[in-house]
Image (cartoon, rainbow, N blue to C red; front, side):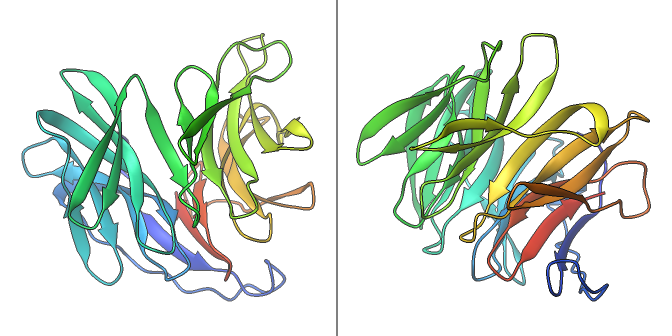
Length: 254
């Protein structure tokens, strides 16, 4: 876990103006926190180091709230939240990943070997179990892999069913993708480096993530209509965008 500042940025006019607000989400008693998802109400979810040194999931909308892990879990991560406040993530029980759903005070175990990463307002869940998957209406669909690759994971889904994530491409490199039911997986590019990672998509189909530069650093990006924009950094060497809503508010670590 790298120490990081966790910030929410509101970009005016899709980056056409340099006007934004910044909010520190706080911590869980440890030295670092990471925000990964955000919903239309501005509630962010993620994880942070606790006083005991474990990793705990949280949600935050003005105040940080811990989310309970599954029975016997050590580290717990929250990755996605929909407009109803249902949260998905992953707990580690005896070192084994288990997908987890938080719905109010109720938690649901999706099973071992599953990473639950994103959820839309219809309750469709995406994640990875070796391949990117979509769980909707009780049916799990394998979304496949990128050309030449053998591994993929989905990280975000919008209400139209557009899925984003990343996978390998057979040469040790990773590329972000956008998946639709009609077009399958579309590979994203980089900013001159080797890798890119798509992490979230909003209702307008705007995608965020991070991509490597020729220098080896990585910068957060915003992809609108297939055009990737480099968002720069927050003063450090790299930056990472993990969430976007319709405003658009972006959750960025840098």
